[in-house]
View 1 (cartoon, helix red, strand yellow):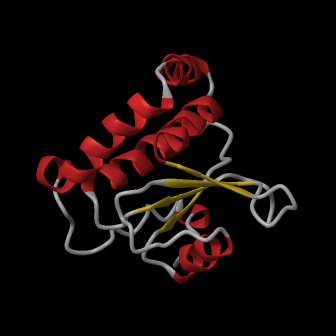
View 2 (cartoon, one colour):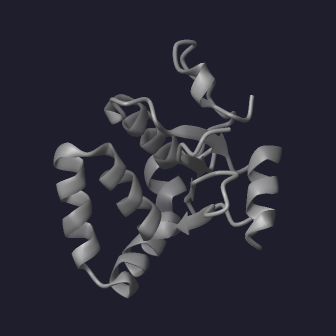
View 3 (cartoon, helix red, strand yellow):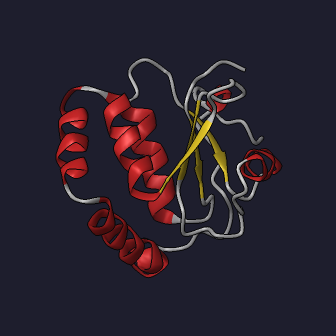
Length: 140
């Protein structure tokens, strides 16, 4: 597996699925890969980092997967990382998001995460990716 960043997301969360669709749409270089937190793939990766996939309120990015410098990026730092990697105007948005102190960003992140099912809904099943994008999902 290459060092492409991998987004680990709640497969039943409407907001998380919108984030995946947003990333697919704006990832012009086809860099990102995806896996739901409910998958065995995510359980294995999170276990290496002492994290628990039961906490579905946390969105993760795995940077440098299976490389010596592999790291797990969580919450608001993960959002900043994704925006930066998408480049262009999204990198600028990530820069302004990063200007906020991490404590403030994480509080905002936690408020949204706790209320995401109420605001964006909870899906009955994890949606299947578009066949043209299926190669980017690691938990099929």
